[in-house]
Image (cartoon, rainbow, N blue to C red; front, side):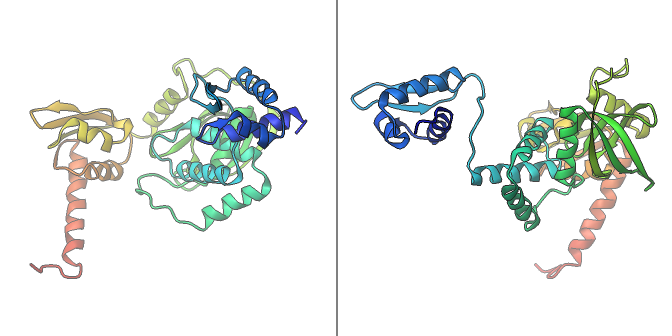
Length: 329
C-alpha cells in the first residue's frame, strides 16, 4: 500500500482494536516493510495518538489512553450504534446527556453517509424506548438541527407552540441549548421581538438553518451565562417550589436517585437524610421523583406538594384495590 494517508488510516483502524499488534503482522496487513510501519507509528504519535511499543524478539504496538482525546475511526456498525444511543438519550432529555452529547450527535450525523443515516432512522423508528416518563419527548432531528445552528452561528427559523397552544413563527440567533435534566431549552435572541427569549425544545417544530451567519450578541448584563438567563426567565413565569423532605435512608443511598437539579441531601440523624431545595419543576414531576427514591420519606413542605402526594397515594391505592386478585391473602 503506497498511499501514505490511506495507509495511516488503515493502521489507525487496526490499532484501535483492543489488542497488541506484532510489527511483522502489521507490515503484512499493510503490505509494507517493518521500517515503514515504525515510521507510520511515529507519524500517528505526532498527530496525538498515544501508540505504545513493546520490546522483545517480536515487538508490538497498541493504542493506549493518552492525555487528550484524538479523533477516532468508526466502522459502519459502531457509527450506527453510537448515533442510535445518542439519539435515544437526547430525545428523552435524560439526565447527564447535556449539550456536549448533542454536539457530538450533530457532528456524527453531519458526516454519516446516507445509507447509514437511513439505518439509524429505521432502527429508531422500529423500536420503543422504556423511559421514566418524567420528561418531554423530543425529536432528535429537531435537537441536532438546533445544535448545528448554534455551533455554526447560523440564524434559525422554526415554528413554536406556546403554553396556551398559540402557534407562531420565530426567527432567531440561537445562542445555547440548556438541559435541566427533564427538559431541553433553547436560549436565543428573537429577531422579530428584538430581545432574548427561551424556548422549550419539545414545542419547537420545523427548524431550519437559514445559512445566514451572525456574531453572537452579549447576554443581558444580569446573566453570566445561558443557564442563568434561563433561570431568570423561568422565575418570571413559574414560582419556585421550596421542597423540604426527610428520607429514612442514608444520603449516599438517596442522592443517586434524585435529579441533579435538586442538589445533595444532608445527613439527618444516624440513618436518615434531609433535602431542602428550590425547584421550578411541576408538582407532579417532583412527587414522582420523590416516590422513585424507593424509601420512606416525610414531606415538610410545601403544603401543595403534600396535598398532591395525598391525592396521588389515594389514586394508586384505589387502582391497586381494583386489580385482579385484590383483597386476597
